[in-house]
Amino acid sequence: MSMANVDKGELISQVKQQIAVANAQEMLTQMTQKCFKKCVNKPGTSLDSGEQKCISMCMDRFMDSWNLISQTYGQRLQRME
Amino acid sequence: MSDINELSDKEKELQEFFLIEKQKAQINAQIHEFNEICWEKCIGRPGTKLDHSTETCLSNCVDRFIDTSLLIARRFAQMLQKQASRDM
Image (tube, rainbow over all chains, first blue to last red):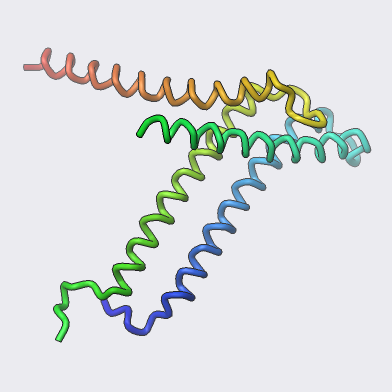
């Protein structure tokens, strides 16, 4: 298979973008499930202000959690080498 | 005339790029999995920040999950070996 006609830079850029999009989608899916579970306990006819505030805080805590776990995992991987 | 089996420099570069990105993606997927599991174990009601005990719980959770993984892998291998020697 000849890659002579492939623009390497463009291919790399496209792949990186697709990976970033996939990561963001996973983040979004998880966040939505977790925060709905934590914050919306008795679904009403709309999201009340308490629920909205909870969801907002939940999103921030979810990111905090993700970053902390990323850090811990990185450290563990280094120790395992 | 280049050998059809020889990868060009460009192809080698792309191959390495894909290898690295694949590893990065695998690590990322693992982090998502840990976050999913440890969130359930450690997070109560979302507050204005993660308190110290929650942070400790999350951190411990990752390490204990990996320890569990390793323990199960080791013991499972032993179980298979025992089974194999019984079947002989």
